Length: 224
Image (cartoon, rainbow, N blue to C red; front, side, top):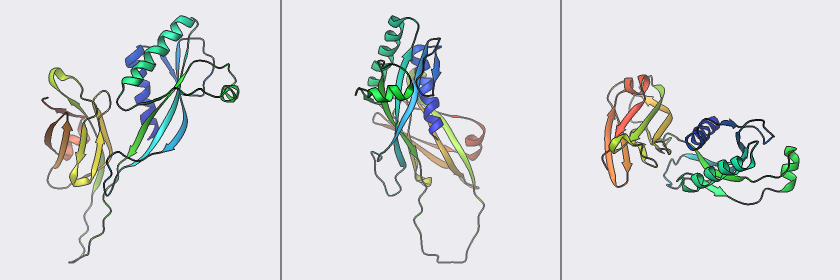
């Protein structure tokens, strides 16, 4: 689960800086242009929209550093990442000074850096109990992941769109590239799942078959 956020940040750095090496370990001196993305803390957090079965959520805190043989290039890379992070709807930027003892623990000299915090959510299914009013019936239910992308006019990705599967009590949002994912979705033996997409005042409802979930990544078009 955390590795999904690691990949997300790695791809985000690539979107901003292009073909640059990303290092997920503790900060250390590098011989080539490198961006360090180091997970320093896992903090408690609550989802913005509280429901009866709200997603489990924590906040991940990453320290971002930059290495280059040329100081000017390092500063250029760092500033581009900083201002891109400040504009990102999911990131919280922390510019607090990193204590000297922290750099000492890394075994390197203090250097310019900043932290970003972003949420890690895990959806939950509704565990509400109901009174049994008839004979027990056993049904086999398979589980599958669901992945997709939401795009608008000119096939532009739509970020921060609200994606929900009411029948499964699952809710998530799209990232900066319009992507979304549910890690565990029940595959119904009969019928279709209704996927609701809300973005910028518009809503689209699409019926999803089990075969679509298993065989391909969903592409959702929404007119804004």
